[in-house]
Image (cartoon, rainbow, N blue to C red; front, side, top):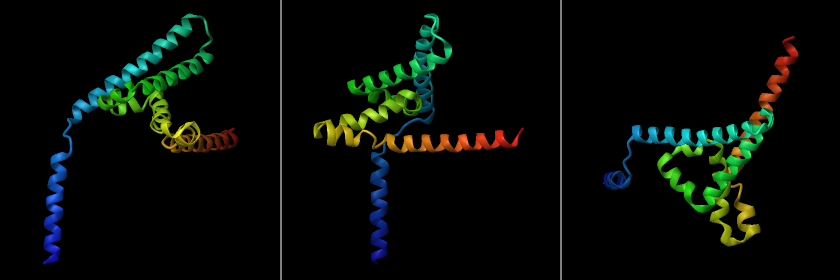
Length: 154
């Protein structure tokens, strides 16, 4: 008898959950992600073209563009604009380098009322920490593999 009541409660709960879940169109979400991610990359390409037209060497331009794109992502996050972009673009706003800047600045903005040390400083890498660990770890592993392949394939 109790198992039946438990199942009925679970079914009622599942129905309530289904009613409150926002419905979205996968096709629309994919198109928005593609368009917004492409526009972010277009801005990066525009910045790159501007630096190249100024005569800056190509190997230096990448660092400048990355720095500017991180700044723009952090600046737009601070203004609250990047979160609105993310609501419509989804992964299109997360994947480019500006998404990384957003993942660093968002927790810092959220905890700034707790102070600069225990709020901003302590919480800044809450979300980005695993990204940094994965990126650094995978780059080390790839570097070791590259070294071993170069050593044995001569």
